[in-house]
Amino acid sequence: MPRSCLVLLLLSLLTTTAGCSRPATPAPADGVLATSAHLVRARAGDAVFQASAMDVSRLDPAIAARYGLNPGRGGALLLVTLRDADGDALAPDDLVLTATASVLPDPPEALELQHLQVDGLNDYVGVFAARAPANVQFHVIATRHGRRAELDTHVQLYPP
Image (cartoon, rainbow, N blue to C red; front, side, top):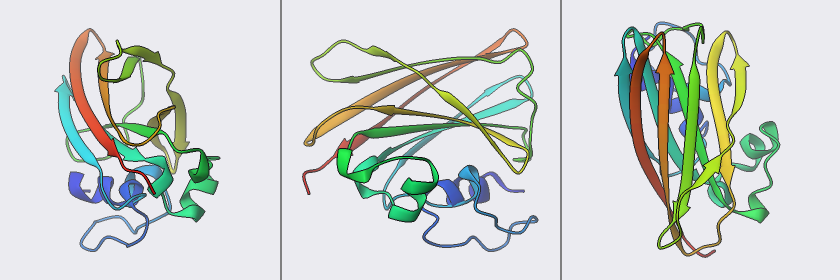
């Protein structure tokens, strides 16, 4: 499955993707959760890590409910996906993920990431409490089988 198809389902789930080799299913990495997200990718050996950040208050309500999020509470959502080069499932063998989040000028804080497995795909989600307006910065370090990747992403939170 092309990597672009993997991002589309989680980033908005408002639309379905076309042209993917696998049918679209409501899984974190196959749709769209919000109208805007900043997406970055990095490799560590055979693993491809992708991180995207979204404004929780702008999530589709049905999708927010699926992940147990309350859009009314706001904050910033970080999604990290683990795939192979073709965008297919990859076991999290020996995977260590650490993430920090911050709103400048505050120093970064550790962000807990929760593992989600949907349709055999491994995703990791964390929510950082922040009030709009704010630019939330995320830094992720992923280590797997001794290979390391670093990703930086961000999301701008706007008042309603």
